[in-house]
Length: 476
Image: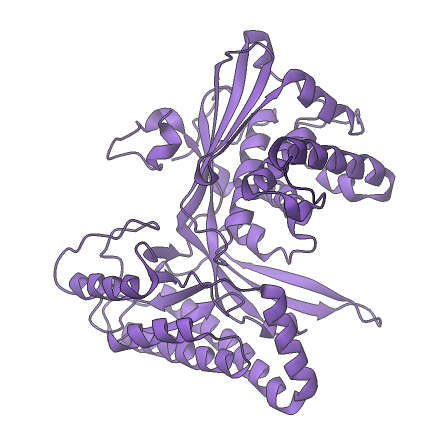
């Protein structure tokens, strides 16, 4: 559902953005010349609903509601004005599309940028973590961190733009709901940044987008703002998560040397055409540290380069070979011998890649148990992301007795009901996995679909079978 042409910026709308799954290339991609392949999880999304509501207090300008982390905060006109006054008041506002976001990190604007970040951090911390003596950013709760990101994007994107709802004694309400598990390596943070950037750009831009998935210029602007927001939280992100959430489909990422110095630049290549494949995702709910896992592989490689080097090269080769396999699936007719062979090849790559990841020390007994369970049902699985916990994905495809695309998409905590025939096997697999990992740990997802999208709210009624949104997004 896309925004109708000519819609007022004050008419309610929803911006949504998908999560992501790394299919192949984890850990090898850390080293120059090795590819990683990631795809969007189009059925797992973050939804940000923008609407105006009568202000109970005339001083209230903005209400931010983050339903998944039980966070709500109101901001006054004076507070928003104070945030705005910490930025440089450039006279070249352009069309409000935010295309000048890169200037925020240029040397001549660095003081303004850092002053804004410091102001927002102090404000969010004072209102959210007053009982925490630590004054570093890590002291922020998940809700406070998300509020920091939104206020950062709001202040910069709306700079020099009128707040059109102010004269009507209304407040802008932004309500966010996500179906992406947090802390599971599925890109929930970037999805949030992308959805917020897309909504704010639509709200404050004079150039209204009527079909965002086809507007490459606007998506590039959204992606740039989302990356800036991700840097605020994560320091030096690769850009994979926000790129796949913005553009959808799939992408490859590779670090390549630049110049003669020991400097590397990440090269992202978008793959717009990617087969729509159903995966089963299982959250192990096993906590892990990405930095510790990456560091462990690095030390292993330094100590035993002739062993670890070839393993990483083999992971890279699996990634490049799998891309050809996915490409062949685009032109392959379903339920044919050719398609079955392609899925069999993918299953082999998945099993082999998982064994190689175990060999470099990023597995975990919980992940091994999940893979063993899916293997008993005839499916191939591997970890996605850093490993040591997090999520495992299972290829449903032609494996075992399952068929693709038959079951309804599930969200965490919502196991799909069985239908007929082979769907019973998938439901039995989900039941077995949830007996290991807990209720709601396994859920179906589709990869390779739409990236960031704008939706018109009036086309969906809360509680209706036709609504494309989570109920919590539409209900007061």
